[in-house]
Image (cartoon, rainbow, N blue to C red):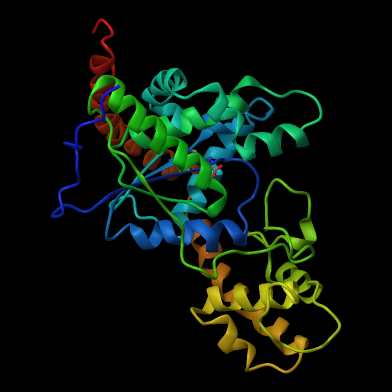
Length: 339
Ligand code: TRP
C-alpha cells in the first residue's frame, strides 16, 4: 500500500491544541488520580481547547450493578468540578450521551487487529485478575478508547504512564485508517505529566496507588477526612535505617512520602529530604500538606448538587456532539458507507 500523504489536518499553530482525556466512573478518586492526572487536566484548561469525558461505557467492561454507573458518573463529574474544571472553559460530558463514541468504536474494531489488542498489558492484567466473567468488551476496550480520542481531532492526550500502550494503539489505528481510506483523523500525541506525580501505595510502595487494587490503608482518597489522612500517613510503610533520603530503589516508602510532599507543595523531593532527619516530622508534614490539598476540594463539593452537575453534563454533551457528529460523518464517507 502506498505511503500516506502528509497530513492535511496538521494543527494550526495559531489555535490552541485540542486536548482530550477520559476517566472511568468507578470507585473513589484517590491522590494518585489527582496528582498523577486530574490536576493536569485543570492546569491545561486555560491553554488548551480541552474536552473531558466520563467514560461510562468503558466502566461496563467489568461487571456492574444496575444503577451503579449512573451514580458513579454524577459523583465523578461532581469531583471534577470541585477540583477546578470550569465548564465555561472546558467541555465535560458523559460518553454514553454522545452516541458517536459507540458508533466509531465499532469502526475502530474493524481497523484494530486481534493481535494488536491481544498485546495490551492492561487486558492481560485485568483478565487474569477477574476470576469469573471476562467480557468481550474488556478485550475491545482500546478500540473504543481510540474512538473517544479521534472523534475530537485531538492533538494531545494527557494520561498516566499506564495508558501509554492504549494511546499508541490509537495513533496506530488513526494512521492505518488514514492510509486505507485517506486523511480522516488527526494523529494524537501522548503526554505524560511531569515527574513527581507517580504516587505509590502507602502500604506497598512498590505498587502504584490504585483504585482497582484492594489496599484501603495504602490509598488516600480525595474524600478522606483529616483524621483518616493522618492515620494512613502515620502508618505508611518506611524502613528501619531511619535516614531521610530520596532513593526509590532502596527506600521506596520514604521516597514515596517525599514525592507526595513535593507534588502537594510544588517542591523537589531530593531538596525536601535534606530538611528532615526523622520520619515522624516528615509524616506530619505530608499529612498536613494533604489535608490542605483536599480541604478546599471537599468544601466545593458540598456546594454542588446533582441537578447542577447534570446541567453541566447536558450542556457538555451538546457541545461534544457538535464536534463528534461531523467527524463521524467524515469517517463514514471516507470508508464509503452509504450515507
Ligand atoms: N482507559 C482510560 C483509563 O482507564 C480511560 C479512557 C477512556 C481514556 N477513553 C479515554 C483516557 C480517552 C484518555 C483518552 O484511565
